[in-house]
Image (spheres, rainbow, N blue to C red):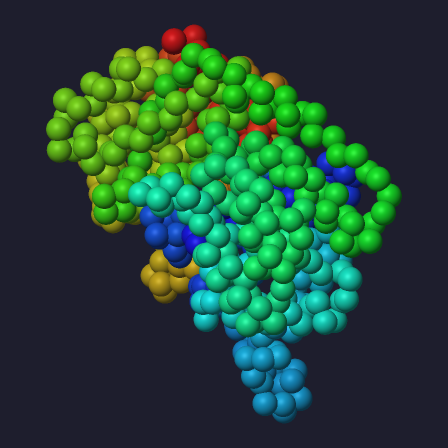
Length: 531
């Protein structure tokens, strides 16, 4: 089921194999007709992650990068829309030489060719492939067919791992294996027998449950891996190794040499996470939190993880609270609650909902010396607030929301205006890595430790309007990061404030558990001083 932890499981196994000195890479297969994840609603689908080469993809690709500490590319993500688009284009170009193009075998063959390409480009010993969705759904049936065909084509080189949930009904208090048994039968109907079963549950798996799964699912007890709930996702690889999953995988592939995995740094991080420490309270003012009666965090997962990485760096306990921007629009006094936080983050987003509340929150942080970090729209909102309340441009806004405003301090580039006019939205934003030249002697320069030029990942269509740059700088807004190719503002900050910085890019995409992003690290450093 969705949210069971397929992405974290995939990333964790990759980390374990990597720790044994193998080259690994991961591929996420999404069963959506969307060509990429860029047009999906983050409340419905979760965060849209962006790779260095500009692919908008599922948040699991972000988990892969964070765990194996490598930048992935377009070749690490497959969707149904992308596969069908490729096959149809090939058919239109007569590349099938007049054959009747069918769902099977041509769609699975395209999937397999993409997997082989990723293997070739990354020169990996192991490829971890996560098939999204649930066993038995028609959406991912063609991917299961591709998996079945792969094992036939590459005997001895393909291994199947099923991740299944074992519920503990509250009224009964007993862990149930029946859903897992049914899942295996659905897989069997697709022509696949799992080699290993990851048993997700609220508690560790006991011997009777392992024996039952072994008996009814045609696997040995050693191949049933316990995956209980843990405090942090970074504990998962360590937990898996308790059941020696790395050894089981190597044995099944006939790799007999003993290679001891070294998760020393990972275990050290887990120790920091589990140690009881004083909390550091960070407020996140956003709009993608609510889905009916439930509060979701997947919309901002990379931001949340980046905060955790930086807080753990300083050996503190992260406490991130979700603050709905709409609240400050309905009740202006509600913004006073920001005083109880050590720092405030305003993340990215699209559209008008909550923008007034974000601007109010930023104004409060600026006036009350509360450390503030603005990401993408958060940076743009900070520019609007400064223009209105410091520069006297009362009608300053972004043309994303008010098309013909008097002071369009945030606007699009000419080529983006043409794309919007033609309604070409998918994959047309400023995406992926772009250079940023850092101004010496600034907060940004201190964060990047004096590095003059960095590369950061982008996902946006609107920019700080250079027509207003001089006026904004005149009143004290520092443009501390500039894209050298297009002379676009990448970072803004204020002098004389404990920490007030906004960046047009998304630094959260490059943060790692053992290597926090410099801007988040410097932000958390400032919050510790406030505390």
